[in-house]
Amino acid sequence: MLPTESYRGLAQAVSGQLASLRAGTPEVMKAFSDLGRAATAEGALDKKTKELIALALSVAARCDPCIAFHTQALAKLGATRAELDETLGVAVYMGGGPSLMYAASAIASFTEFAGTPAP
Image (cartoon, rainbow, N blue to C red; front, top):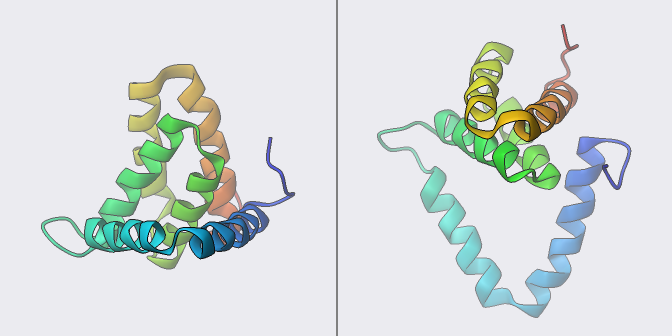
């Protein structure tokens, strides 16, 4: 269950909570941020593909805040619902029933950030 009423609210709440951690462990948080930038930088795979991979892993790990952050990034990167659906199909294939439940959450989150109605 989400601690807030929306994925946008969840992302904002977690970002606020991470600010405290950033203040207490600035070197660790900087290193994590640098890792994220390096991992998602353009290369053989583009940023959108890397975010789709991150979303699939978020679903498999059952991480609602991760789902919120990665669907927000995908909406900003112009991902389509078809790209999201195919990514979630692979996540469900690899993770079974629990991933199916979180795939539904990912669709709700993407719909919220992309501003498009679910079919």
